[in-house]
Image 1 (cartoon, one colour):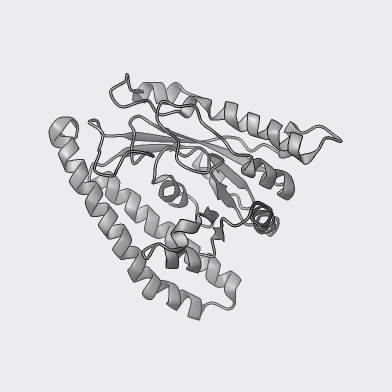
Image 2 (cartoon, rainbow, N blue to C red; image 1 turned 90 degrees about the vertical axis):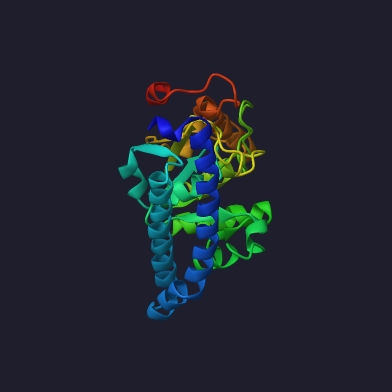
Length: 274
């Protein structure tokens, strides 16, 4: 749709993005005061409530993604979607945009997430993450143990090894937390690549700085791997985590978003990548 590109399209995407942000915040408050408490009361125990509330978030995020697509804010495609439905996997993904969590949770009916401390103080997002029993980003040792525990219970966990959104045009900088979680839990790792043709809600770019062209997001769910495949018998956990992080670094290397104004990545290039 050419009308959604260029100056006119960019202006519309700024308005549409602002509208979606408002609806997202209001929706978070309404759900936290109505739907989530009701689901908790109707559930027998915290485990059942957690599952129902996470499923409600999954459905809500599906609506948000459909709305962004309907408003012409982005297009997207998913490969290997069925692999996300197997529980008990550590889902490791790169993090190019602010809506990566929304996109992935919209594809997974039940999944735990690691939440930054700042969200616990956010008036709009504090209560949804509490109701969903997401894992707070506490001290490193406590975080690794909490994540390993939920994976051993058969729950899936979504982790971004970058720790924050990537910066367009710069190499990815991965932390070793995801590798340490994988080694501690000893569960299958599901690597997920997220490609984006344009900087979209990227770190350092405010929401009103919409790209000139409508972004296209391609999500590629890879084959599961094991942490053991990247470890050597008898080596320390530090060395094993370093080797596994090197695998992640190499695996996600081709997902770096181009700088604005540079030669962007075409949809054909996205389909042939990885």
